[in-house]
Length: 466
Ligand code: ADP
Image 1 (cartoon, helix red, strand yellow):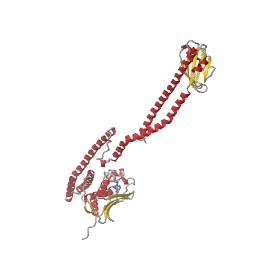
Image 2 (cartoon, protein in one colour):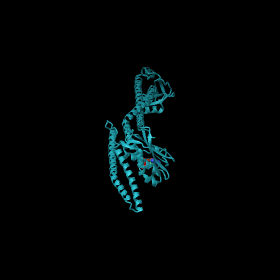
Image 3 (cartoon, rainbow, N blue to C red):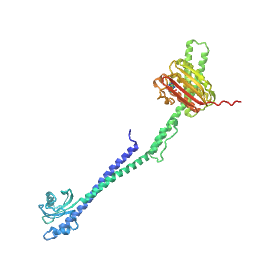
Image 4 (cartoon, protein in one colour):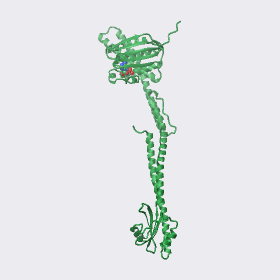
């Protein structure tokens, strides 16, 4: 899985901060070091000038005399001075490096001799200590003055600075990381809100809108764009629902007329047997189409929120008997035995919609059970409830499909479903109708044994006697 955007933003921020801090630290260390060395160089320069003045002032050029006066206050461990001949022989020496040899290479001395220019360089002593050294030629004499100072203090200051930066750097990075995380969280909070709202908006809740951040920034633009898209989607879905509702409503009348005309023709009794067979098949298809149109219309009413139930006292047993007889032809064709069992069970419900429920359940029981199986509708009372059960001895429904069969457009076994025309809407509609009556529709099934669908509604209270 990819890292969340919040984490990636924070990491990017911390990395950039680390690079900037590192570059800045290196720059500061270089500047401070250069500054400290420049201070040493300035001190060396003034010492060399003092020595030169002193030497030139004395008649015999006694070095020791001058060092006494010019090197006053210089700690011997910090500073050194030598008076050299033009060939590099140490004539006099003072300070830390009481050496008999010149502490710089002969090339440097030769260059100072030849160019008359001051030579400034850093050298390492044997003990690893570093010195800044200045070599100048005494004007008018065959002598060179060398002054040096240890860089130990300056180096220690630089080291201390590096240490402080190394110690505080990670803390600064941690603080930056936490700050970055909080910033990213704050910046992305509107996105999380939009995401959770958008995830909630299903086809049934297209009127909802994602929250628009008040800042009026890019995220607000995104939210407005999403909301505009939702508006267009809502309008499109509404137009489609309207079309389905209108089309199915318009189809009802011609289908009813066709059904009546077929009944009349079949009732005449003058038709040859071939024609009777064709007309009976046409009547069966008309019935099937009527059921489909009825389902579509119910669905459209549900979606538009215009379902109007007209509840009256109804006996579930009667509804079951009607459904069985209206599906008798289909059952015969499929060689499925259908029957009604049980007792009267009165409820207060819309008989038209109850019929849709029972027909959808029984049609499935017939459609999905193979030849030779049985589909039974049983009605009865269970305490305060009235029950209608449609059971079959068909192949059953796989356990993993069972929780989904009431979802719209769900068809359990694609290969088997293909043999039986259907849209995956029958059970969803049945379930919505039962729930609209404050009832419950449940399914149980065992593969290879059969399925059972139970409609549970509140039983009608018996009329008070007298
Ligand atoms: P349709 O029958 O149009 O496919 P339904 O919503 O009525 O849609 O049913 C959903 C699915 O549940 C069906 O595709 C079928 O696989 C399964 N199903 C429903 N009733 C039965 C039954 N009695 N026996 C076996 N499978 C069934």
